Image (cartoon, rainbow, N blue to C red):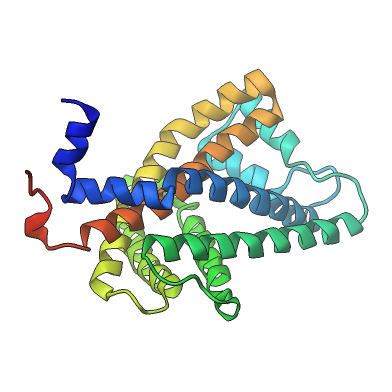
Length: 269
């Protein structure tokens, strides 16, 4: 079947609507752009915060958490510790880094707000509504942090308690994502559609957690051996891109799937 024939066949179905939504929103490009901007905003923030609370020349708390969470050793552990070692410098650097980080975070919040408005086909947010994007960022960071202790729980208390906490975490994620979606859609989207988006994103988050647990340790080790500390940057950016793709493509899929009656999803010509 030719490409034009396939396009004609899926036109008017949920598959055709999804392909059209991907073209309209340029979601893949948008995911990459937002991931890059998130990295630019978050990386200096990590350095500023850990630098403020870590002695000069010491390994940061963030580096120790990465090493512990993914069980890093050898080249990967050395590269992470080198990347996040606090430099011996004056406190003025921290203020400059904090200023740059705040500007990047505000710009990122505006971009995310516009992206969600495009996904849900809403008017672009006004200047007075930009605080919603910043609140969304804080909520997403909080939900990412919630999973950081699961590895320690499994090591200290066994697999059973880890499963219970993971199920609880999925519930918290679903509720948190529902309110995150509502925050950026200004209450103009039906709750049932937001609940569908929250469910899709939660499943995607769980998949990223499983994938990153299997991927990141080996990726960090391999990239560290090839490129040193800069290789750690490559691997971390891949994780951020996957997370951002879930946060954008999940709502897009839900928005398309809930925009038409279920009986028309698989209609063919």
